[in-house]
Length: 533
Image 1 (cartoon, helix red, strand yellow):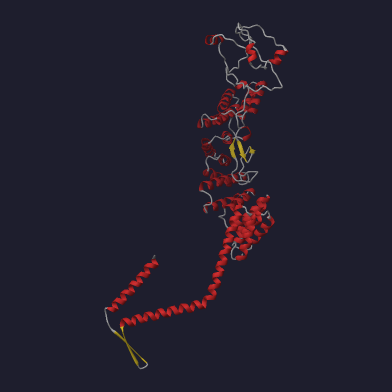
Image 2 (tube, rainbow, N blue to C red; image 1 turned 120 degrees about the horizontal axis):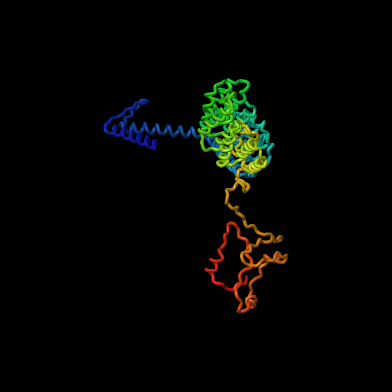
């Protein structure tokens, strides 16, 4: 559009110029070689324009003839390149679709039409074709050859990393990922693998630097980065707790600021403060964590904050925690444990039973069994409580990748994943199991399921004698009690005309959830009629 507008402006300007000359008549005289030529001004202008146009056309023709060999060769070269890129594109699509044969065919075709040093994607397509054909050794060699090319080096490292992961060689995979992370810190796969390697070596400072780099390059969100930093700082505080208490205190406090509801960070920070006799600040950290989510490690450290406290002082601190989080099973169990240590058995029993009512689990029954043994020594009740504990759901624990741990750890022992442990109940006994009838409220009748009776076994049915005579329990009756003869026309014909209906001689035992129908009410509603059975 702009070019068309410019062309129109030029034409308009030329028109204005010629119109201006036409309105101003004049002559132009040219003397050359003794001759004098005289023409009008308009003719002279037209002649000049024609000469310039002719010169330009002649120059274009001469230039085209001079460059014609190069132009022809460039045409065929471009056509050949287009065919090569078309083959390369088809091969990449075939590799993505899993067609190894077509990918290999298009790889050879593209290599003939395009030089591999000009188009690095040919190396990638060849490696992908080898992987699809199952030639992992050839693919690995191709990836290794990419390391010599600065443009293809990251791609080669990525391929070697995936091959090492496929073979299960985690050390080699982390080596290639580390090299890639040095060259390009923004690569997520390289950074994650390098982070796993650093945490496996317990290099918490290096891992923290890597997380900061990920945060600065916006590979991960701010909240995720803060969560990872809190985990790494907590692990660092635990590692330096004995060797460098000051550094451990600094790391733990920073982790607690990043995640105030993270129990391991709160415990590490409070423990470091308690070692420096800063009980007040450490208690505040534990109280904040307890309000966010009650945790037994927080309660244990809080009640034993001062080593010289008496058992009654610990009981009072446990009750203080209970006031902060009322109607919670963990609060009741904390008070019950402290009361058991203080030999306040009534309080311990009351709180343990309250914990069972709020959350029936293994630890509550075990605690109640300890209370029963300490107070009464009744081994029968203790065994009964222990049996209930075995059948109750398990207490929450630190779980990661199917591994149950009593203590928190920064990485999974199975996969090496950072921040893998979660505080939850293990999966093997999450469902509410059936307890003994002693756990059921008084007056509640158990539900009996009607199971299909096997054909190979016949059991006698209990008979309730309401008004009829005693029934015989002979073997023949037991053998034929479930046998029902079919009703046929011959059976009806054999019945006498003056036959009267009879009451059944026996009545099956009623299930607790089936009260049945009152006989008198049934007699009022239905008239007596003839019955075969």
